[in-house]
Length: 256
Length: 214
Image (cartoon, rainbow over all chains, first blue to last red; front, side):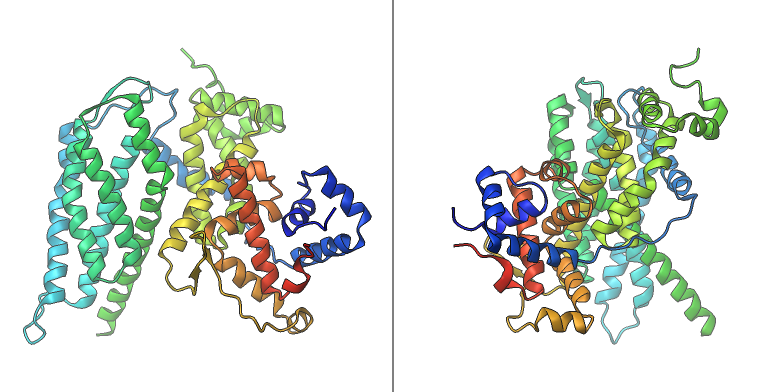
């Protein structure tokens, strides 16, 4: 038999060798044993990232952060379904969206205001406006995604007309934010908003009554692309940046 | 009427923890959590948080990302508890979820990170460019350079390569477990491990020693 291939050596090293002939060859071939030993030495040199220490109460801290999220989205199928948000509740959620869109417009106006004229808002203020608006938009999008992921746990068709109305309005705001973050030079966020927009459009244009397989399809689209997770991650980053810019602005204000 | 599995909630987590020290008790906690007992789920979260954090940190290499992965993992676990097979180990199951969450995060991060110097490989996967005139391994070790170089190589790998390699080499998951955790077929998981190993050895300047294939 010829010498072991690179892949066979790796499999052997990890204890996953499949071919009995290859295993037998190794016991007879000094060159292959030497190659295996060299591989072992190389992999031993690979540094294993040492996680920072977590205190004895780390589990309790994780639970404290997690608990409100579980309450907000009790999604385990054995629990009775959460009553769907009523239209009044949706309207309450909606109210800030028009405001956020106006704020983004302010951002755009500020950015493109002629330099010789007095700008309506400073660059720092514009950045804060954008961060607040996008953070709020992502939070609302997250609510919708959570509702969609959790809908239809009982395996019956679900009326998603309320969510569709929500999605339709989010599409308009999303488009505005996407264009704004592209102009602001945030390709990562622009890409997320682009993906989010495609999903929102799809939800808005589906029939209002969805079968369990339609819902599974939507869920799979959200989960396979890690959309909900990415929305949460970017939202957290946006909120942190927002806090940092607010602190900086406060510091600048005190100094001046 | 008391709901089945809720008999411990009045006593709180302390009594629950006292009673649940072994695998059998964990199985009871899973059953209770599936029945809607959030204190039982709390027990599971508290018991596995550190392990999940360690896995997430090793995969993402970043404390903040690892914390995000911990939270997302337990949210997903809570949502999917009804799909958990009670014969399985909760710890293994939740670690698979964590690996999947970390992989998702790495994918999202790699896609949007234009700062790294990468080239597209023939299979569309991102690969790093290795200089041909690397110094010898001995000199690298002597200069304390080898770990930095390997770390940089790991950081520049595709999300899939890094995830698969870390899960195999550091966490000791089998190829079959990795393929389940990352939602891949076994061949893709295996090839990712191969590519990762090849890149690491290239970074060590070991290409000449790497294979003796005929």
